[in-house]
Structures are given as C-alpha cells and as structure tokens.
Length: 325
Ligand code: FDA
Image (cartoon, rainbow, N blue to C red):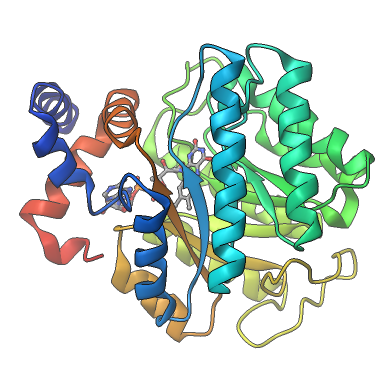
C-alpha cells in the first residue's frame, strides 16, 4: 500500500512543471549556484554544525563534462577557505568520468584530492550504484597508496558485500580508513542486497560495529531513529562519545578537523530537530549540502531511483512536524 502511494507520488511529481519541483526541492537543495550554498551555510553555521558540499550531477556522457565538475569544486574549495567554513567535499566519481575512462576519471579525482590536501581538506567519494562500488573503493585504496590519505568513501548497509569491504580495506588503509555509513539510496537487486527495512537496518548497524572495531573513522549518515540509537550504544560500548578522545588502540590520529573518531551526518532539510538534539548532546554533526544547476535532474532521478523518498517528501509537507529543517 505504502509502495503504491509512493509510486503514485513519483508518477505525479515527474509530470509537474519545473517550478513545482523546485518548490518541493528547495528545502533539500541549496539552489542552483555556489552562492546559494554559501548563504545556507552562513545561516546554519550558527548551529555549530559542519558541512559537506555536493555539486549536483552524476553520470556524465563525455569527459568534457568532467572538467565542469573539477572547476566547480575548485570554486567550492576557495569559498570554504574564504568564508572559513568547517566543511569538506562530497563528489560523485562518475561525474569525474570514472565510468567513461577509468584512468582519466581517476586522474581528475587525484588532482582534486591533491589540491584539497594542500588545504587539509577531506574529500568523500559518494557511493553510487553497484556498477561502481569496486571502482570507487579501488580509487580510495590507490590514492592512499600514493600518500593522498585525505579521501574516504561511503558504505551502503543494504549491500551484502559491505562487511567484507571493511575487512579488506582494514588491511590496506589501516587506521586511516574513513567511511560514511548509510543504508544506501539505490534499490539494488536482491541477489546482492537486502531489500526489507529490518534487514537494511541490521546490515547498516552491523557495518557501524565493524567500522568501529576496525579503528576507522565512522560518519553515521542516517535520519532513522533505530540506526541512530544503535550507533549511540555502539559508540558507548567503544567508550566513544561527546567530549571523549577516541580511545580505540587501533584508531588513527584526529585529522582534517574531524570529530573524535565519529560524527553524525544528515541531509539538508531533513529532521533538523534530531540533528540539533544530537549537536546539543555534544555529538559532531555535519549537513550534506547539495547545490547546482542540475537540481531538477537530481530531484527527479532520486525520486525515480527510490520511490520511498516520494512518501517521505509528501510526509514532510503534509506532516511538517515530523521533519522540520
Ligand atoms: P529512512 O529512509 O528510514 O528515513 C528515516 C526518516 O527520515 C524518514 O521517515 C523521513 O522522515 C526522513 N527522511 C529520510 N530521507 C529523507 C528525504 N530524502 N526527504 C525527506 N525526509 C527524509 N546513499 C547512497 O547510496 N550513497 C551515498 O553516498 C549517500 N550519501 C548520503 C549522505 C548523507 C549525509 C545522508 C544522510 C544520506 C546519504 N545517502 C547516501 C542516502 C542514504 O543511503 C539513505 O537513502 C537516506 O539517508 C535515507 O535513509 P535513512 O537512514 O535516513 O532512513
């Protein structure tokens, strides 16, 4: 029933005029320009939160398009420095050309990560669908091997492979491994991924345990109470938490203005009160700020990829008390 309603909302939204989609998405997307993202970050900085910035746009069709993303992220780095924001970068490897020409895509990412390193800035490779999971992890491993350790990626709790990926990277990246753990937005086939809510939550929580055991940095990216509650108890059992240094013997040094071994991350516009509550309890929180000309494609694609977002967005509008920004 919920699935049908969600699909109905998606079918309706994709037929709506652009202005309507913009109206719906403006809460979740800073706007079309970097200046829009800067304005939002200035406003939210007062909450004591930090940021990760995403230039919207995913898989590209020619390597020329990758130049746009490279140049735009350089502008982002400059804006972060100029405004002294506590912020880092989130990039989509396919927007840098990874699926068109692996070597050229890798070189684009390498150049950006190297530039960010000169500013002690961290770069997170967002995780896209299963076609690029291995490539994305390989890019991180290769860059670390080359000495560029200000880069990490995302693990998706819904994928069967994630626990094994953490173990493999533990050997290669050691304490410098740095993950965002989330459920995973892409609806993957059932031979490689959990598909029920309970299994996805359990898969995500198992990854949180594994990341913490491995001594890696753990960015918990969820708005879901059972995941956040679980993360808090997992942190407590590792004697980690607000105001505490990371006591894990196998953990790396604190780097790139990060928290003591962990942080919570949320999307712009989603469950602000929960984010503020975590911050008030002393947890480091980070807001994911997407912006860019491709806001329309991004909004529609996300809706089509995972129709449950349709019902979440509808709920946010019809029952705003459940999801204040
Ligand atoms: P769940 O979907 O159960 O949401 C819990 C509640 O939060 C909902 O009931 C609703 O109230 C609210 N909510 C959640 N998402 C919402 C939305 N979009 N709009 C309105 N309300 C919403 N995925 C991926 O595959 N690769 C990646 O790189 C990333 N990166 C990433 C970064 C950050 C900072 C976050 C927070 C999330 C991601 N994700 C992601 C997305 C993630 O995998 C997942 O799809 C969403 O966060 C939704 O899962 P939750 O754990 O929040 O639970």
